[in-house]
Amino acid sequence: MLTGKQKRHLRSLAHHVTPVTQVGKGGVSANMIEQLNLALESKELIKVSILQNCEEDKDVVAKQLAEGTGAELVQLIGKQVVLYKESTENKQIELP
Image (cartoon, rainbow, N blue to C red):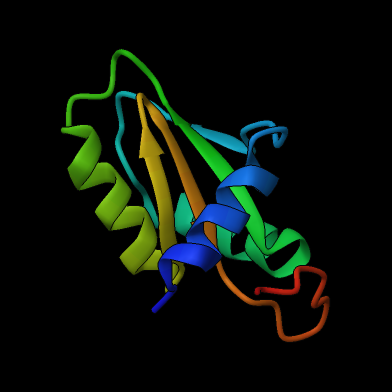
């Protein structure tokens, strides 16, 4: 579980990150979770965009992404989801 100070730090780092993938009409799939796990292992902090045509609620999608990847939900703002998961091999981000 992240503290408020850690979430603030991660939000500031995520500001300039471009989304790695998009959730569309099909919703969250097992293949998408697998790809996000690979991205989290290499980058630790990723952003996912939820498209307008996504049929599920953005809160549900964010929760599915966080639970599926085992990552912490840092932020859900608009249709952008920011996820953080500490890497076992490529530790880059030092949390306060």
